[in-house]
Amino acid sequence: MSAIEKLRGLGALARSAPAIVAIGAIGVASIALAADVAQSDETQVAGLLKTRLPKTQLTKVDCKKVDGLCEVTAGANLFYVNHGARYLIIGRVYDMETRQDLTAARLLEINPDMLVGGAAKANAAAAEAPDEVAPEVSAAKGGVGRTTLPARPVALNLTGLPSDGAIVWGNRAARQTVTVFTDFRCGYCRALTNVLRSMDVRVVERPISVLGSRDIADRVYCSKNQEEALHAAYAGEPFKAPGSCDTKGLDANEKFAQKHGLSGTPVIVRSDGAMLEGYRPKEFLEAWLKGAKS
Image (spheres, rainbow, N blue to C red):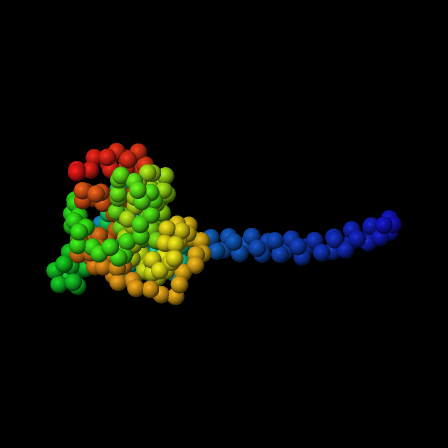
């Protein structure tokens, strides 16, 4: 390239530089504006909530995480409101694209102790209205108090459950058997499954739909290789499944769970009927299973 051509190239670059700078400035300004709007929404929502729920101590308001909603942290509890802070939503938010329970993830951040025995605690924290809302909820439901979970037994008699509806995996010849009630969209269940895979134990898994996972349970249960499909489902990987099969056994799981107040997962049941709620590490489970009464 000649010196003249180089000079021409530099001139063209100089002429385009203002446009490049302008585009960059617009991009930075857009990002700043979006941040300001989100901050403004959070400040406005926090102000409205202080007026409408004056006795509720707010920890944080986040209007950026979920489109159309603001996530409100109040101590150990979590709930959601719209951007006008008119509608208060009690429950879980699930991201169907990433297959992540956003509510459970946030509750684990603010309550790390939920990792052990966390199913009931997480459900309670996500399903409990602020104290100031509870009386209105009670009146609307004809005297029923705040949203609470049914009392759960400390032991479960599984003899009434049919053999159908169970997915048996692990070491089928193992001396110890453990029954687990799980949901394929439950992060704690996935973690528990990984622990059980590393243990010498026979696993009887009974899926229940707590987080709207019945469609996945049907496909896993109807698969030719149920164990392979089960692990693929937890990993979010595709797996082959026939069109349909008899899933009455899964219906029985659901009815059993409802009857015994099992509205959180995982639930772990030992061979003698002793029951645990929530995730447990390997060392704990090995010792606990050995303690089964014959």
